[in-house]
Amino acid sequence: MRAIRHSLMVEPAGVDDIPSIMAIERMPGYSELVGCYEAGEHLRRMAAPTCTYLLGRDAGEVVGFAVVRRDDDGMGTAQLHRIAVSSPGNGYGLAFMQEICRWVFEEHDIDRLWLDVLASNQRAVCLYAALGFVKEGVMRESLRLGEGRHDLVLMSLLRRDWTQQSN
Ligand SMILES: CC(C)(COP(=O)(O)OP(=O)(O)OC[C@H]1O[C@@H](n2cnc3c(N)ncnc32)[C@H](O)[C@@H]1OP(=O)(O)O)[C@@H](O)C(=O)NCCC(=O)NCCS
Image (tube, rainbow, N blue to C red; front, side, top):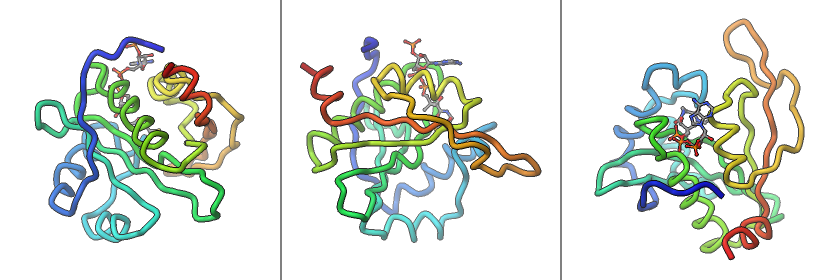
């Protein structure tokens, strides 16, 4: 696994954190990569029992947010639904994802963390691969953006992958 440059605190986000989250998702170029909600939609999603918003903090400052959504079929799986950092390319993504994986596998009864990512989002694909996520295939043209349709790459990290590389 790559060296982690930052030591981030990860904590569940609350309603008061919605403005910080909205500021990050509105950064230039982010809306196509991670989506963009109004405050009411964040509130609705935060209230869902299967959904946890997480914040990454560096020395108290919010440097990223993520949403982990537990699948409600009782299979012990969860989706990393969204992740974005405020200062891309500076190692925060790797540090934040590392802590998210720790939170998922060490603090929750989740055996498989999966995600989908735009095939063209190489920065994100490389980040997930660096953490041990395995590509499982391509969901062809499953995302509609404007007029176009785009492939999504399906990736997952299993509890046993995580345990092996943490030891
Ligand atoms: C994707 C995202 C979370 C990654 O976080 P980050 O802080 O930019 O990534 P890091 O600096 O920690 O880099 C982690 C790894 O990603 C890869 N990477 C970083 N920048 C890259 C680039 N421009 N192109 C390809 N790979 C890149 C490298 O493998 C890097 O590891 P290294 O530093 O050892 O080389 C962040 O860029 C972001 O918020 N992007 C916009 C929203 C988004 O795309 N979210 C993901 C949706 S699925």
